[in-house]
Each structure stands twice: as C-alpha cells, then as structure tokens.
Amino acid sequence: MNQITQIHEPVLLDDCVNLVAPALNAPGSVVVDCTLGLAGHATAFLKAAPNATLLGIDRDAEALSLATQRMKDEGLADRFIPVHAAFDEFAQAVESHGISTVQAVFMDLGLSSLQIDETERGFSYAHDAPLDMRMDVSQPLTAQRILAEYDEADLTRIFKEYGEERFARQIARRIVSTRQQQPLVSSEQLNRLVDDVIPRAHRGTGNPAKRVFQALRIEVNGELDKLRRTLPQIANHLAVGGRLVVESYHSLEDRTVKTFMNKGLTVDVPANMPVIPDDAQPFFKALTRGAIKADEQEIAHNPRSASVRLRAVELTRPIPQRWRTTFTHEAFDENEGPRHHFQNNKRKAHRRSR
Image (cartoon, rainbow, N blue to C red; front, side, top):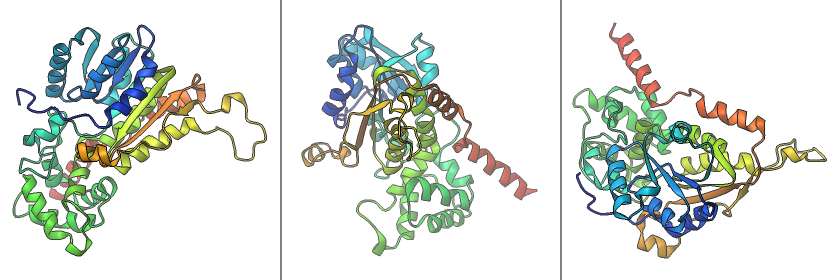
C-alpha cells in the first residue's frame, strides 16, 4: 500500500483532545502518542496545543512513514518526532530523545486505519487474506504459525483468555485435526472452520469468528503483555499535572487499564487504619467518571466507536518511591509473552519427534 486510500475519523476525537490538550499549555510541553497509526489523533493534539511537541510511536514502519508524510502536509513536522518501536519500549523511546518527563500520553488500542484497510495482513475476518496479523512485519510469529504449531492446550488458552470464546476447546481441537490434512493459511479457511464448530443456537451478533481473530491478533502481537509493561513506564515518566489518556476496545484491555489506574486512585493503607499518612494518599485523579463510551450519534457516524472505553487520569503529586520501584519491576519483568510460548511449542514438537 503506497498511499492512504481513506483516513477513518478517529474515535471520540473531541473527547480525546479535550482530555489531552489542557496538559500541554506550557512552552516545551511533550505529548507522546504511543499508537500513532495514521496520526489522526496526533495531528488534532498538535493543532489544539501550539506549544507542544509530539513524539509518535508505532511498530508498523509503513504507518510511521505515512504519518510522517501527513505531518509534513499539515505543516506540523517541526513539532513531530517519529519513533519506530513497540509501545512497551516507551522509556527508551523518550529517553533516547533526551526527554525525562512528559506532560501527556495517549494510547488508542484499536487497529489503525491502515491495518483495517490493508487486507493483505489478514487482520479482518471480513476479507479473505493470508493469516498474518503482524503489526510489525519484521517479527517471525504470525497467526498462520500459531495455528500450525501451537498445541491444543495453548490454542485453547489464547481463545479462552484473549477471545473470551465459550467454545475455545472445541475450536482448538478442530484446528489441530484439520491441519493434519490441510494447513490453515487464509482468513476464509478459519472463518469456515469456526462457523462449522460453533452451534447456531449459541451465537451472538456478528461474525462467529470475531473472538478467535481477536485472540490471535493479541497473541501474535503480545498486546496485553505489552500494555501491562507500558503503563508503569508511562507513570514513571509523567510530570506532575501530566495526563494519561487511553482508548480500549475490548474488556481485557479496559480491565488492564482500569486496574493500573486504580493503583493511584485509592489510598495505599490497610482498610482499618484510622489516619491516612500524606504519602499514602492517591497520586492520580480521575478525569473521567468511569469510562466514556460513544453515544448513539457517534456510533451511527462512526461504527468503529461502538465498543470504545475511554479512561483518563492526571498525576497530582510525585509518585511515592515505593510505587516507582514497583512500576519499574512491572515494566521490565520478563513475563511469558507470545514468542516465549512459540519457542516452548517448538521445543515440545521437537521432543515429540524424537
């Protein structure tokens, strides 16, 4: 794809700008867009905050190139820093540019317009395409390799945990039996397989394979692991008065964001403690009452907004050192991610073949 054929309207754009821009009034303010995509939100932030510089992170080199060109076309290039990285490299991305603290951080955890429209990578179940699903095409792990090499237990795990799929075990079992006769390489094949497995009496609205596609995308790209590692890095780099604004599109993402934000929104003492020390007071202030959802008008105008959950917090005081230490540990803890499971499955397969 050599050009942008269509730029979808960013979800809840006005709400996002209203939450981000107030933190960017001072000269030299820095906002980080961790999910730059085609820069729909990013260009709006810079237009609303003429004193700010935006550092835009994206692991998709094609998206980054297109966003960079858009910034030039919009006359914003002098306040834009592109960074080719996954967002869990947040600390390195900002520090490598001499930035120690930032005034705002934004994350839009949905697929970018490019990924939705570029059918060749097989993100969407609506188009027949190779089962790739990589946001960073330089990585080795694809959806096709997962379907070919993960055992039944691991396939069940990802469909159940990441897709919240009721028929995870039955789908995994069918995949394992099917691949012995024919490899699963296209989205249409996977669509047909899931359609054949899930009883019609137990289907919700929409395509019955949507949860399986979601689970595969999350596993291929390590999305939840990356999100869990990124949020504490962001907190440790927020200036006092800085804001963290996150758009999520499914319950697992939203739960992860909500759990993290709650760490700074509640007092850090036992329930029966009569006096709360100053150091145990909350360090975040909620900027949204729960999560902002799209109203009917927004959904009608922009159907992609139907599942969005928008949450935001402001850092009201320096983060206590014990929390900084905890966040550092959480950010750089080597939890098992998709590549770890991939290597484990290769070792299992090797042992079975001996």
